[in-house]
Length: 199
Image 1: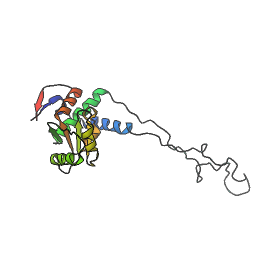
Image 2: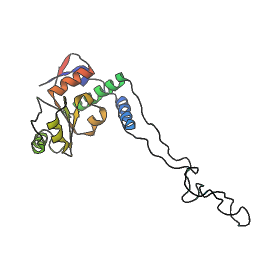
Image 3: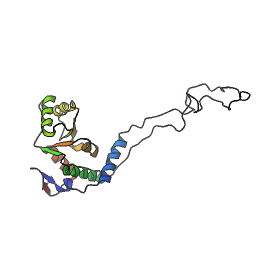
Image 4: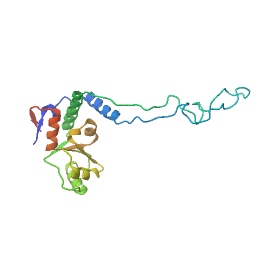
């Protein structure tokens, strides 16, 4: 048994708030470096393509026009910042909703401790397989643990994340979330303190 704060793990599940948090993360991950050239930026000759009159064709003064192959592009993408911001209270409320939803759906797995003296992917793979089977797993580590993180890094269906960096996108990206008790204390410190509930 483990005692869980009711404020964090029995919070009201606000799907709209969780979606907003997830969308903010996705937008902030975008580089926004896509760029195409306008007709004034295309490196082609500036000479008049053909004479003004007498050809029977439309009048054109440049081959850089967007209607021609190799010409510029009209209203194309430009470098753009997609960064969004969200108040801290809203982010924390979204995290409480996500953790409560994970607990409700039985996605959280609590362990006493999870440490390694040196990187051993095979050993960690066996532990994770025992806990979650063939499902994907997110392991929340309480602090920097190079041996454990290096071991998990080689597993395609598992990912190690610092408990202080817990977020909605990663919580819902994996089937199960493995939380050592030390990581649980880190989450308690970040998201608040109330009377515990036994799970």
